[in-house]
Structures are given as structure tokens and as C-alpha cells.
Amino acid sequence: MTLQGKVALVTGGGSGIGRASARKLAANGAKICVADVNEAGGTATVQQIETAGGEAFFIACDVTQAEQVEAMVEATTARYGRLDVALNNAGVGGAMTNADKLDEAVWDAVVNVNLKGVWLCMKYEIPRIIQSGGGSIINVSSLAGLVGFRGNSAYSASKHGVIGLTKSVALEYARLKLRVNAICPGFTETQMVDELVEMVPSMAERIQHNAPMRRLGQADEIADAVVFLAGDTASFITGQAIALDGGASAQ
Ligand SMILES: NC(=O)c1ccc[n+]([C@@H]2O[C@H](COP(=O)([O-])OP(=O)(O)OC[C@H]3O[C@@H](n4cnc5c(N)ncnc54)[C@H](O)[C@@H]3O)[C@@H](O)[C@H]2O)c1
Image (cartoon, rainbow, N blue to C red; front, top):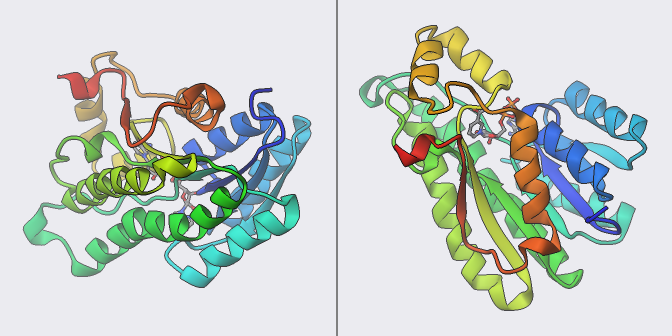
């Protein structure tokens, strides 16, 4: 129980990597705020945590809306009295289209959720985590934040942005015992990848072909790294973008 007594907030906690991480953080003793625009998914995550003997609550929150983000953070500290860990994970995949064919509205939607959403969350989380004596923020970037993603430039740009944001904020708060890191998952078996393959069926072959391990990641494998970064055993790690990609970025 490495996170006993800690309180963690997980955005996009209603599905995939967010759900798996919320469950593992709770299994390690943290109390969890599960936030998502998807109420059914979010409450299902809470139920799963409670069934396993953990403690969690759901709050509906669109990470692009400042007042909702502020309310999410305030609801967490009002309920559990502190905030130690935040996993800023909510994200959208956007469209598979070359840049000259990309709709401006899609660009705005992807960058708003994936990049501005992460900044907005940190804006309200930082003062509360510092009030709690420090802690750990984990921002979800991507393999596409480390290398280009042919056919999805908006997504790749937003995820590269998350890394720059993470490094800068890590430097701003390093002396206040707040660590800020990004994780960069490779293709991981979640609803997001299912939707991607549905949009462009040839992606299934492309993903498999580019994977050194010849398989996708599992959400639980990403969640294990989240638990490590959240806890005190990662006390000297900040400002990093950590690839969790089965070697894909090593190619
Ligand atoms: N699955 C992959 O291969 C992969 C790879 C690299 C990075 N990622 C990133 O991991 C994160 C989680 O993705 P996933 O694969 O678990 O996908 P997912 O679609 O299963 O989960 C994403 C969750 O985010 C929520 N969400 C979307 N927009 C939101 C908003 N505006 N406010 C609040 N919640 C919102 C969705 O409702 C959903 O529950 C994303 O940031 C994604 O970009 C995923």
C-alpha cells in the first residue's frame, strides 16, 4: 500500500488507461476522484474500485472548461481534505487526415482537450498539491509526443506540447516538492485505438508492423508506471517524458 493516505485525481477516468490507473492507484491505498465527461464510464470505474475495497467518487468534468476543472479540484479537496497526485489523462484521438485536409474545428478540439486541458487541470491542481506539502502530477502524452504521427498532426502536436508544458512546470515547482512528469504510451489496447482502427482499418497492420514486441500495450502496463511515478519511490524523477511503448520510440 505505497499510496496509503494519499488522494489522487484522474481525468478521463471512465475508460482505458484512466480507468486502469484509477483502479491501481486505489489498490495501492489512494482515495480517488474519477473525473470524466462520460458519466456512465466514470461511475463504473468508481463501482469497480469500491467492489475491490477502495474509496472513490465520480465527478463530471470537461477538462476544456475552467470552471468545471476548478470545481473538480475543489470537490476532491472538500471530500478528502488534500490532493497529492493528479493524472491528467483525458484525451481525444481526432481524425486521421493529412494536414492540408484537416478541419480547423478538429484541430481546435484536439488541441483544446489534449493540451489546453492538461494546462487547465494543472492550474487548479498545483496550489492544492503544494498546500498538501507536495506531490506528483503525471500528464499523459504519447509516443506521438516523441515522434511524428503520419496522418494525425494535430494529435502529435498536442502531445509534443504536453511534454514542453510538463518540463516547464516541473522546473517551476521543483523546489516545492511537486514533481511533474509525462508518460508516453505507445499504441495501447483501449477504446481510442479501436476507434482509430474503425476509422482507418489499415492502421491495425501499421500498428502491429511498427511494434518491436509485435503487440499493443495493455492499459494495466501503463497504470503500473503511473503508480510508480505517483509514489515516493520516484522522489528524484521530475521533468521527464517517459516512453511506455514496448520499444517503439527506440527504432
Ligand atoms: N490508447 C493508446 O494507444 C494511447 C497511446 C498514447 C497515449 N494515449 C493517451 O492516453 C489517454 C487515455 O486514452 P485511452 O487510450 O485510455 O482512451 P479512451 O478513449 O479509452 O479514454 C479517454 C477518456 O477521456 C475522456 N475524455 C475525452 N474528452 C474529455 C474531456 N474533454 N474532459 C474529460 N474527459 C474527457 C473520455 O470520455 C474517455 O473516458 C489519452 O490522453 C490518450 O491520448 C493513448
